[in-house]
Amino acid sequence: MKIGVVGAGMMGCGIAETAAQAGFTVINVDTFSSALENAQKCVQKDMEKLVAKGKRIRGEADAVIARIAYGTDMRMLADCDAVIEAVPENLELKASIFAQLDAIVKPEAFLASNTSAIAISALSAKMTNPARCVGMHFFCPAPVMKLVEIVDGLYTAPETTGRAVELAKALGKTPAKAPEMPGFLVNRMLVPMQNEAAFLVMEGADPKDVDTAMKLGANFPMGPLELTDFVGVDIMYNTMLTLYESFHDSKYRPCPLLANMIAAGRLGRKSGRGFYEYG
Ligand code: 3HC
Image (cartoon, rainbow, N blue to C red):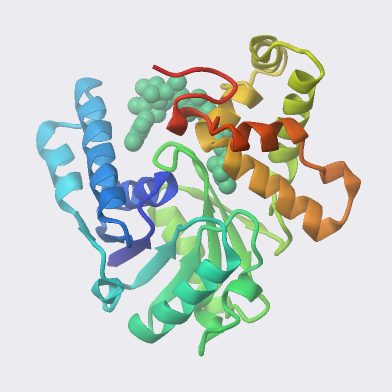
């Protein structure tokens, strides 16, 4: 089975790595060759770590790396059996990618979006065959996190959902069906908690204390602010904004501190500074 991944950012790269680790042939496409180069380096680094930890022998790690091909031309995805889109959370961008994939990828393949908040029905609106479009939402870091949320749009065929569930299992993940509502299951609960942590900082709390509280008081592997830096302050803020604009409920109002941090370029680990500084 051949898996296509559109987008070579943190999520796209992680999904491609996950699929290659599960033994699939993978094609990772992005319009930016610099993103593809970074993705390739990232997979190589992860494989080195697994070899150093004794979790993979060198030959296996090399085989994982060799199973992923990279390119900038979407037509490379034509004979994939499933394509997973993981580009930034922009409805227009995603809808246009799905319209292109619908025309390029063989009709018997299914097309999934890793969107964390946008309705599948909206993404598939410009497709000739929206029945083959479904949500498969992975979590960061994709090679490690066990959950994949499966989301049906109004036109998703039951056969497509079944194939997405089977693919998630074949990738070593546990699928959970989520309603087609902004934030699905996890982000609907998790992101407001991260947002509340940002409010605490805005009100004077030290980020370290906020994170320590949740790590030691609630057994979180990472504090909510560490997690925001890890995922990206901009990504987290945009998810919050989507919840707010979709439900029109003030309980989802994004913390203004996050908007200031974005304006100041403090996007988290990827920019070297968020709630914390990174070397
Ligand atoms: N492939 C396979 N295994 C890998 C791997 C890879 N690429 N990278 C790491 N691993 C394994 C490691 O070998 C290690 O296994 P071990 O415990 O058996 O040795 C395990 O994964 C953990 O890795 P590390 O030891 O490097 O790191 P930590 O123990 O510090 O854990 C973490 C890091 C998994 C990120 C942990 O801190 C964590 O779970 N944090 C919370 C993450 C979270 O909440 N994610 C959800 C974000 S929200 C989201 O994604 C939604 C989206 O819409 C934005």
